[in-house]
Image 1 (cartoon, one colour):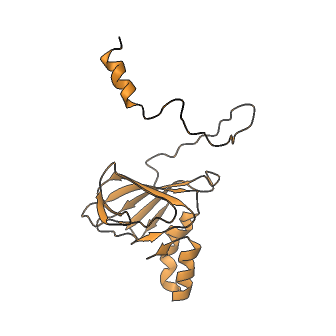
Image 2 (cartoon, one colour):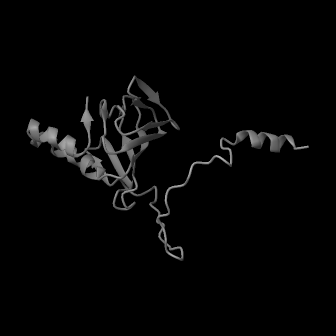
Length: 179
């Protein structure tokens, strides 16, 4: 007879071992493994500071992941705002709240995202996020496949210098379609 512990563990599994989806195609084909992992320490300063309102930490960008994904830590100051409803045509986006409270738009409503909350947005999915709270919020943002989001984050500083047509073209070039 199985112990209570083993019975409980069996109930945790979500997968039938005979019905697991296939893995992606093999990408690493060399005979021997290689030493290629790298670490980015938490104490490293932000890669880009947007006038003290938003700090961007480029954890793993498109170039570093060979286009697989882009992963960013974004720290938003109290009442630092954020983008309104928009969507992307070329990539999915995911948000994981590390600390604080951030307003997340899921295409239907603005909801509070608290520490540990997660929002996934497939390509074409309407979403937005903003910090309306009196405290800093920090989140991880994941884009897949990777895109040169650094140019997008840093390009906001020049938007005032563009004409309306240039600004509209810039947003499209950066795969941001605002509603």
